[in-house]
Amino acid sequence: MRDTKMPNLGLALTPIIAMFLLMGIGSVGLGLPAEPMLIISAIVAGIIAIYLGYTYNDMISTIAEKIAKVMPALLILISVGLLIGAWMIGGTIPMLIYYGLEIVSPTYLYITALVVTSIVAVCTGTSWGSVGTIGVAFMGVALGMEGVNIAIVAGAVVSGAYFGDKLSPLSDTTNLAAAVTRTDLFVHIKHLLYTTVPSWLVAAVVLFIAGFTIDAEGAAGSEKVAAINGTLSTAFSWNIMLIVPVLIILIGSMKKFPTIPVMLTSSAVAMFNAVVFQGFSISDTFSSIVSGFNTTMLGEGFDLGTASDDIMRLLNRGGMSGMMGTLLIAFCALAFAGILATTKSLEVIVEALLKFAKNTGSIILTTIATGLLTISTTCNGQVSILMPGELLRPAYIKRGLHPKNLGRTIEDSASIIEPILPWTAAGAYMAATLGVATIEYLPWATLCWTGIFFASLWGFTGFGIAKLTPEEQAEMLKELEAESAPVAR
Image 1: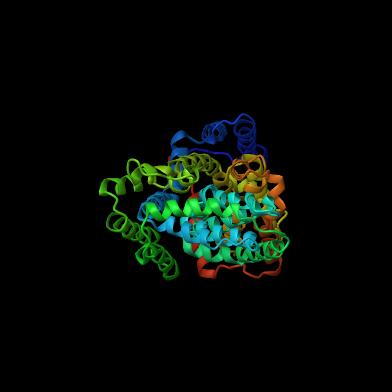
Image 2: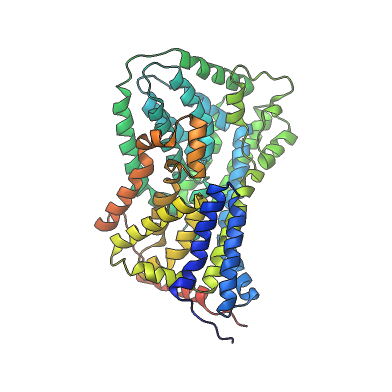
């Protein structure tokens, strides 16, 4: 056995500070990719690890252990890409969009935008995709109507998109939050309901009331909807079989069946629909699940109509390869977190943080503060889930709190905060895609900032806070002890 030293708080914080600076200056200021910034941060952490007496093999072993623990979630991410590609070419997602647009009504435009975007986001698991597709369609409708406040429509779309992104088993961030807290995916989603549903209801009430301020109706907006739906109905055939893939996911979620087999079953049915009912070739069907659907698969010379740009934004997506970017950043973040775990820097930081956390409410506030700090500095949703999760999970277990409380609070303070911060990638994307400045739609994206309020309230009242049984706590403490045990050298 070789002697190793515990880092002091300054050394423990150095890699974290380096990561914040690199992500803040490099990714936000200079527009550099996040992955190299994380790798450089890992190098800084590695130098400190060597100074403390650890070897390269020690660090690699810990990184490998962490990757192994989240591998099931990473496999789910790949399955999500496969599923979206299958649902797209099978006609399931196009049908959902078609009937979603059919219910648009001027007086109820705001609440309709929230509801329909929520449904689409839950079914697809992508907030960005939902905003770039159904959200763009709603903005087009809003621009064609007199008296409509487009900032409110944008806020409704963003709220709906992130509602679905949080509660969908297809969401990458939801899968990452479940993975980093070692919580079953569907257990994690069910626990999210305690804060997400109240936030959604608040948003619904606000948008419903705001809808009655619209003075006049305009017909121009319906032309864009008609163009989109006309093309969709020409490109795809609607029938009851197209809803079966959705039912498989919903039933599988309620029955708590293994996630990946459920997704693969749903994908297989969607692929059957693509060949049998939509008339796509087997080659295009398999290409869609690997590389994503593309409107060129509709056939040479197919007329996308006057809304061709919107149709391509709606349909060109999915595929396993589309998840590679998320997987890459996850591996880089896990490498950084693994080295911090090797040196026990995480334990030192957590102990310092928890000096201010005397009860359940204060540990929830500590988690919120950590999430807000991470997302506002790194501007990356995945990193802002992985880092607080690794930092704070042991503290929750030692306090007898189920880690699913941590996963929920991380999402409340990082995932859904990201689109209302103008300097983050999500904030910039939403503003550019919807054509409304982030600051303008922020007040109306009610769901994105009320989650923090409900998380804090439940933390201090105890409502919706899951406790570990003595047996569960003992088992998790043994796992923590095994994870932190020194590696034989």
